Image 1 (cartoon, rainbow, N blue to C red):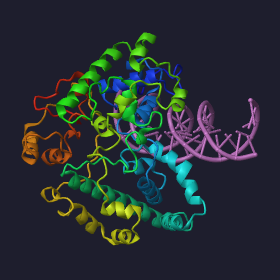
Image 2: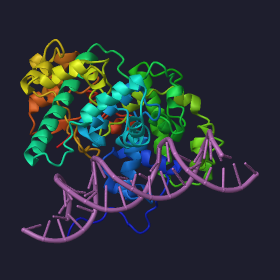
Image 3: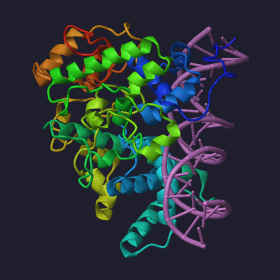
Image 4: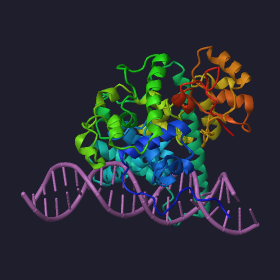
Amino acid sequence: MGRPPCCDKIDVKKGPWTPEEDIILVSYIQRNGPGNWRSAPTNTGLQRCSKSCRLRWTNYLRPGIRRGNFTEQEEKMIIHLQALLGNRWAAIASYLPQRTDNDIKNYWNTHLKKKLEKPLGNSDQENHHHHERHVNLKPRCPSRSSEAAMARGKWERRLQTDIHMAKQALCEALSIDNKPIINIPDNLTPSQSTTAAYASSAENIARLLPNWMNGSKKLSQTSSESIGTMKTCSSLVKKQFQSPLSEDNESSLKFGSNCKVNPHDQKKNHCSNYSYSDVTRSVSAETSATMFQDESKPNMKDQMPPLSFLEKWLFDDATTQEDLMNMTLQEREDLCTSPSINPRATTSALPLHYTLPKKLPPLGQGEPPNEEYLQETIKEYGLNFTQDDARVWERLHGNGGPKRVFGIGSSDLDFVVTKTSSSSYGITPSFVN
DNA sequence: AATTGGGTCAACCGCCGAAAC
DNA sequence: AGTTTCGGCGGTTGACCCAAT
């Protein structure tokens, strides 16, 4: 005997998700956190398989997702990373925190692949050759020995790890200044960046939850404001969740007066069917991103820092790339831990690479905040710290123990729903074992 | 106005390793 | 230890849109 199945495979619904289904799923995730997909269909009454729920969340509903309008920088990064890593879209997506692997894959298949195959103009041609140089690194030639291929595989993995480590170090170092780190291209206004139907996930959630940020015209500026708006949202969600498969009267509550929405018309109407589009604009992706913790995407102070050495390397600068390529692993590690890049690195013997746990514990099972951890964190940030620090946690507990998830509020889904802090200290109990 | 063909992208499929029983 | 499912991933499909004819 093995595991019991998560859902009845016979009555599973397929095809596009309806807004009602989205609401049900979002509500469920607000209560239970992402990760427990197995129980999602049974607990919500959704006629979807767990896999479909997970996919819907990770590719579409998850906050912090930006859709469409790939910037030139993103495009270059994808091209370079694809050349370096191949079609490992999940790995590539980990360098573009706001993009899903599915989106990147689609964008590659529909835009970039063709673009690179086409004969190009002068400036593009350089990129093309540049790209080809990378592509040619790949072990395509069957005459190559398997040892060479293996060595290359190892080298790629090491390089990937190194890049990741360096990026995180840079993220950490640069985010200390509390600079705005969200990476919205200059040429896009907030509304432009979310013009597509179901454009940003913040928009999605707001669409599903009309009072999501009710009463906060501006972006939430203080934590109390955020809490207030979250309260509104939360109570609404609770209310909705009590009768998720409700009839028209409730769906009109959810979607406003024009709520007879055919999902396939959404693209046409560009959200005009929804009465809360203005409210939606007041929600930054960043704000909403902190309200959920995704289990598959490292939050790691999520966004990219300003153009870094590594980004330069990823984008254009062949010289820089060669420099990095020529570095030994040790040298690259030194770069990552250099105090000039990461002032905090000197105090830590721990690797900067921190992998987020894949699962969140069920509500109520998180451990209480650890005193030692709190003291260390307060020492590091003062009393007003608002984020957990995995590095501190790991320094105190090593790799064996339970791991703390980044981010107050972001990982504390219980808080989002119940509005009661999970701990008297105000930090989240989001541990995994 | 009708048809056609290419572009786009959400969602499904199948595989694999890990986890649960 | 063996079986079954889950979760994650990459490849693919098919419905929809839109411009060209």
